[in-house]
Amino acid sequence: MKKSISLFFLIFLIIAVGKAQEKTTTSQSYFSTGFKQIKESANFGLVFSGANVKYGHHWAKTENNRIFSIENEIGVSIPFSKGIPALDIYLKPAGISYLFCTPGNSFAVGPLGKIEYNYTLYPQLQSAFDYWFTNISMGVNTLYNFTVAGQSLSARLKFTLCGFTSRQPESRNPYFYDIGFKHAIKHLNADFEFSTLNKFNTTDFELSWKPKPASRITWAYCFTYSGYFETPEISMVCHNIKLTFNPKNQ
Image (tube, rainbow, N blue to C red; front, side, top):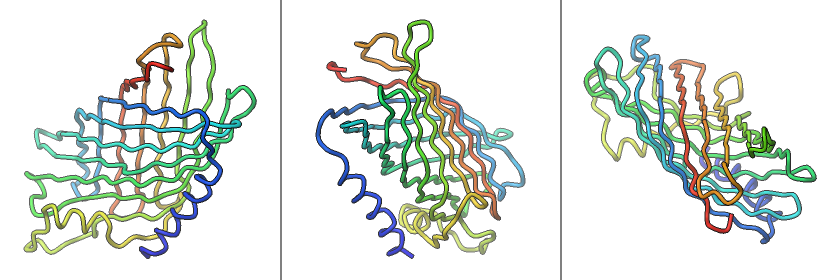
C-alpha cells in the first residue's frame, strides 16, 4: 500500500514539474483565523466548535498560461462541546497543483494532489485514545479572476475525487492506552484504503480581494469541508478570514 501511495504522487509530481518552466515565480505566506466545527461519530453525536488558526505558504511558477504551485499549512483548534474541550491539529505537508489558464488568465483549471492530516484528542471524554483522519488524494483545482466595481476579486474551488484514507478503528480495547507522539505518527499513516467520492470528500472554497494592485495584503474568506462517510464517520467545517502577505514586487 505504501508503495502505491508513493507511486501515486511521484507520477503526478514528475508530470507537473516537467511542464512547469521558469518564468514568473511568486512566494507568499499567509495567516488565517476563524471558526471550526467537528462532529466525530465516536463522541455520541456531540459537535465540538471553537476558534482555529492556520499558517501557510504558497509558492508558484507561471509560464505560457500554465501555473505550477506548491502549498503547505499547519493549524490548531481548541473546540468545545458542553464545556468539554478538545485539541485538534491540522497539517498539510504538500498541496501540489498544475493549472491550465484561458487567455487573459481569467479562468484556470487543473489537477490537484495533496496530503492532509487531522489529529484530535478529547482528554475529558476519550482520554485513552486519539482520533484522526488522513487523506492522500487527487482532485480538481479551479480559479476564476474577475472585477466588481473596479475591485480585483478571485474565486478558487478545490475538491477531491479519489485517494487513500486512514481512520481510527471503530472500536478499541478500553484498557489499552495508545496516545503519544510515537503513536500519533504511526496512526496517521496506518491502514490506508483507496477511497472515492462515495467514502470521503474534502472541499475548499476561497474568495479573495486585493484592494490595490500594489497592495502588500490580500484578504480572503475561506470555507473548508472534510468528511468521511463510512464508520467511523466524521465531518469538519471551517470558516476563516485569511491574510496573504504579498512581496513588494507584486
